[in-house]
Length: 386
Ligand code: SAH
Image 1 (cartoon, rainbow, N blue to C red):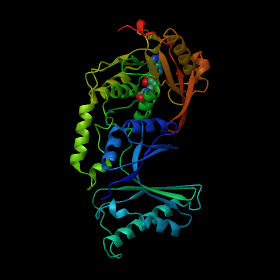
Image 2 (image 1 turned 90 degrees about the horizontal axis):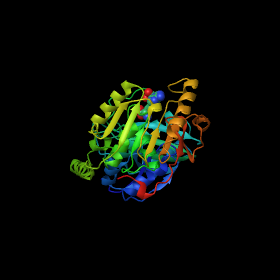
Image 3 (image 1 turned 45 degrees about the horizontal axis):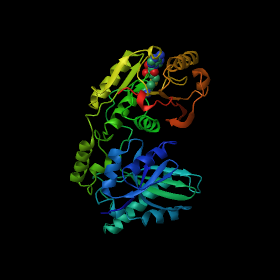
Image 4 (image 1 turned 60 degrees about the vertical axis):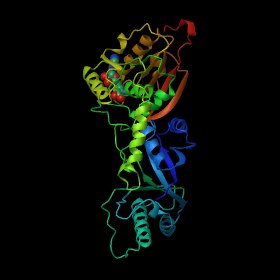
């Protein structure tokens, strides 16, 4: 089977650079593009990136790329890729997605059907099977996707399975959870380090706190879930296990963290606690029912991360205005704390009462949101209580 692959890690718009940084931290050179990061690697790279990347959506093998303006070009292009080195005989290989953007070929169901036909023909040809007999497809599954953008086809195989944001710890999620990979990315974009206190005063199901604790303890985000590649014949289960074992060794459960999540809704606190328990972090994070308005602390140099309700989601506009105003008043004494607030409300700064030092456009699902960033005043090292 094939040794070296062209790979991509897909990422939500605005998070590509964060994913790129994570890939580099794994020691893998990469190239950041719109919606994805490209890199090369072997089976081990596929396993490691799936287990370790916090902000990515999926890891895909790029089987090939070629110009495709006609169905004939599409068929030939797909046929000539080396499918036999990836898909063993007997495997299932559904073409699950076809996407056409700004291209002559625009009928997605036809593109999907032709892609399938070309792969079937190639495998029949390579393995000397008669064309009259359909290939058996009852083995492990290789999900194929084709995208034709500006007349260029990219054919990929998904290695991940259900998206990487599904870490496997969510028992319940409440009304408006943030995706785990987006929460991790925001923590990576913040100036939080494991030696600083972190508070999420509107923690809901606890996603920011749990992701921060996992980052702080160097816990691999994929330790608790399975992936599509684990079913594949040419992925050695022993190698997967050794990478999982290595990840377990790299975790630092002894590090002292100061992470708290609060929410006005006691039911959300119960959910957050259950989710933390599922990840083995129940002793690490403090979850408590409390109103944001009651937040007070003597600690310094901390980070507040909050994804408060916004009009579209949970509260009516008037209540949102009052809440954001209260937020401004409650946070303002916390001079040395940095604050990162994620909301779709374009008037957030006026309601909060001060202009952000920096804004970053992101997407929470399909909803455009901004991360409003307020940096805390610098504290001289001698003033930091140890
Ligand atoms: N990031 C969270 C979702 C937050 S939704 C997650 O991943 O699950 C916003 C949360 O703010 C809700 O859980 C809501 O109960 C809480 N909330 C609303 N008003 C609040 C207030 N005044 N004080 C504290 N929490 C509040």
